[in-house]
Each structure stands twice: as C-alpha cells, then as structure tokens.
Length: 480
Image 1 (cartoon, rainbow, N blue to C red):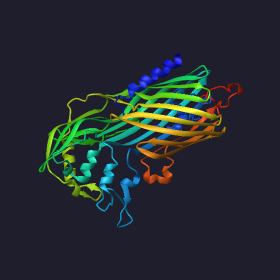
Image 2: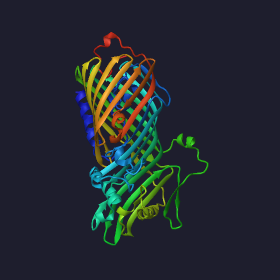
Image 3: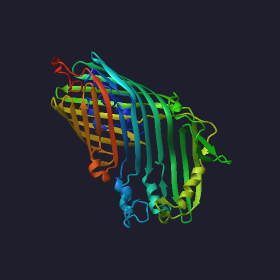
Image 4: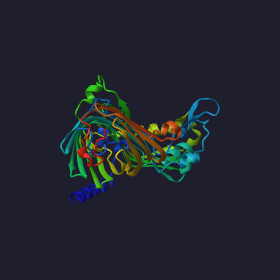
C-alpha cells in the first residue's frame, strides 16, 4: 500500500510541475544509472551508493559543463570561406548556404543554453538502512530563447512581414548563478523500496530574467512598427546608468569590487527540494522516479527593474542587403540601439522570484546479470512554456571491482546522434570518473548541437559487501 501511495504521490507532483513555467539546467543523462558514483544521488536522492562513506575532494569531486542548442550543428554556424582558407559565419556575404534550408530547421521557439556546476564540498555515509549526504555546490545556468521570426527578420529583412506581424514574444534571456547547501536523506524500506529527499538552502549571486509579455514587429511599405510590453529584472553588483531623460544606458562596474567577498555573501535566499523513489516490483526490474530542483530563489539585493512598453515607429529597412562582415548592418543596429535606450528603470527596486529549472526523471532498469544491466531514462523540463524531453538508453557493465563502463544513446535537444560514455576507475580509497552524453562529438562534432561532460575524484571507504547481502536490490548492491 505504501509503495503504491508513494508512486501516485510523486506521479501527481510530476504532472503538477510539468504544467508550470521553469528554467533550464541539465545534468548528464548517462550519470543516472552509474550508481557506483556517489554523485548519482544528485539525480535521484533515493539512490544509496554502494560504499559506506565517501568524501568528495573540494572543487574537483564533481565538475559538470554543458553547452548547446536545439537545432544547429557547428557547420551550420561556422563554415569555410569559398574564396580562401579562412573561417566565416553564416552571416558573411561570401557564405554559401541556403537561407530557406537554414530557416526550415528552426522551430517556432528555439534556444541556446550553457550550464556549469561544481561541488566545493560533499560527503555521505550509511547508518543501517539510512544514507545521509551533504553537498555545497556552485551552479550557473544561462539560456537564450529566440523565435523563428527573429531569424527571418535578420536574414530576409522586413519585406517578409509586409502587412503582417512578426511575433517576438518568445525572445528572452535567463541567467541564474547561486550557491546550494544540500542535505540528503535516503531510507531503505524492506528489500524492494527506497525513498529519498534532499532539502536545500540557496543563496543567489547573479540573476537576469526576461518577462516578455508581448513583442510584435509590423512592417508596411514605408514604416516599421514595434509594439512592446517587456520586463527585465536583474540582481547583480553592476550599477545601472541612465541618460538625462531617464532612459536606460547600460551598466557600470562598481568601484573597489571584491568578487570573492561578493560570492561569499548570503543574499537572495531561496529554498529547494529533491524527491526520489526506487522500487523493485520483481527481482530483475527496477523502477525509479525523481523530481529535482523543485524550489525558488527570492532576489531582493541589488535589484534593477527595467521596462520596455509602448509603440515605436521606424523608417522601413531591407535588412537582407545590410549584412556586412559577419554583422548585421547599421540600420538594424540603429533599431536595436533605439529599443535599448527606450527601456525605463522603475523608481523602485522590486524583488522577484525565479524557479530553479525543475526536472522530472523516470527510469527503468533490467538486470541481465550481476555485472550487466540495460536501462532507459526519460527527462522532462519546461523552457519558456515549451516542454523539452530527453530519452536515454544505456548499457551498464561492471567488469571488475575497479572498473565500470557505460555506453548510452540519447535523443535530446532535437538531435538523434548523441552517443554517450561513462568510465569509473578505482573504488576504494580513490575513485576517478568521467561521463559525457556526447562522446560522439569526437567523431562528428560538426553535426553535434550540444556537448556536456562531468568528471571528478572521490575518496570511498567501506565498499565491499558481505555475501549475505546477495538479495539486496541493484541500486544498493556494492560492486567493488
């Protein structure tokens, strides 16, 4: 009864989150089923690592970097100049590429992303059927959303929207940088159920959030009309500047700024929680579900509120003939500068709240033998009200106590060529690991739209399991 209730509870919470608007941050898909690595608990707090104690070496126990987009490979953006050996971008006048083909690759809503995570300190230990863990982490995530209409404007000019409105309301930037203190608790119930929770206290460093309620572009034969109702909220040590007319004029760096002192402050407090469950309905099958980064940060320090609202009129311009030397020409820049200077700084700095980039994971694993299993993992998250999904199939082999390898295949970020790899060397007392969802980038990097990797070094103690533990489920069993 309790098992069914827990699954229904988490499933209901999953559906609730998937209809909310949240931001983007990603972990390696391949990590999820590499349960010899203590950092796997970051993706599901129900996981109990096989060693009784671990210590993550400061700053190097877990480093994750990811960058990518949902449509383009490197060769779609950068190409060889047909007239010489130099490299040029697709905007260069000598570039030989099909505009129609380029635009056809775009979705109505497109994005770029970049994220970075590192653990400054982490450790965990087992106490009978309980497992406790702690992490002190720094996290940064950046995402840029842009609509297809924006690229149509940039490549074809305003003539594409004569007597029509280009919808730019999906245009937005989101940046979050914060520190996380996490305390995880996992409890094994019987032989086939484990539940876990991680409570987190957060302190924000820097934030830039766009609230683009409406942004439209309309073109007639002699004029361009832009209607905007856009808000940008920032929290950072940068000092906003204004013109004598009160218009926004960029940011200045503060004098005598100490980056280390600023990073150590405990401002912009937030709370978060991770939830997870592992369940074995039969001996060889494991099911799992987790909700990660459910929470918020309230930004109330060094806040700047910007507002762009109203109607703006410009003389008609054909952008298609204004792309020069890899940059959009002066007329387009003039419009951008005019819009930037039309932002107003509100009289009061009003606090605002951001989400953390909540993710939902559902996984299943089939144990072929004690040294080999096959797994499937689904991840879902929302980016500016659009559901993004990732699907990963993996084969996990434990060839020896000191060697674990994983090969994965993922459908993610609009691409189908993501072959991942994971390697764990050693066990006790030292463990080195390297994981990526995109090892295939080494083979066809020119077609790869995203790359991520995670690596680190741990100290493990108490990794050998006694023979009486032979019936312990896969996610708790030791392989060292």
